[in-house]
Image 1 (cartoon, rainbow, N blue to C red):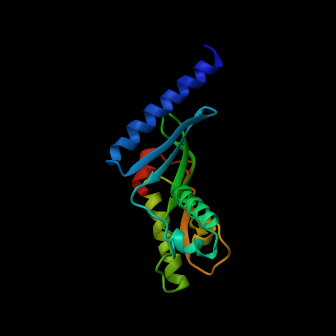
Image 2 (cartoon, one colour):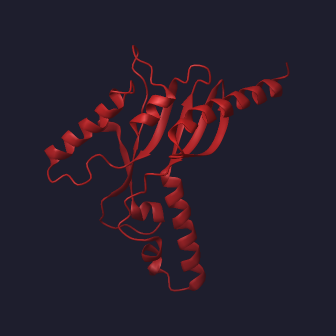
Length: 184
C-alpha cells in the first residue's frame, strides 16, 4: 500500500472512531476537525455547554478603537478568538481510544472561590472528576487565559476567562476518549 493510502486509511479510521464516540453525547460536542498525526488521531472539538467567562463583550473590549474599520476588525478577531479559546484538542489511538494527550477548554476550577483554600479544594475536586473516569489531570498544571488576551486588546485586571486542562493517563489506568468526554 502506498504511504498516502495508508495515511488516508488512518484518517478514515480516525473519522469513524471520532464519529462513534462523539455521537454518544447527544450533540453536546461539535467536532471541528479530525486528522491523523503519526499513527494517532487528532480531533478538535467544542463543548456546546461551555462559554468562556468574559467580563466584557467583544464590542466592549473593542471600544478603544475610534475608526469603524479598526473597531469592526477588532470585533471580528475577538469573536474568532473566543471560538478558538473554546476549542479543545485530543490525540488518541484509533483502535483502543486511549488518549495520548489533550488540551481541553474548561471552566476554571477556582471560579467563585472566596479564599485560596476554597480554590485549592475546588481544583482538587476538578482533578478528582477526571480521576474517576481513569484520566489524570494535575490541578497545578491548569493554564488560563483572560478575556483581554482572547480579545487581543491591552492589559486589564480581570479574572481568567477560560482554563485549559491537560488530561492524560497514569501507567496502570488508560484514559479513553469516551471517559475524557464524560469527565467534562
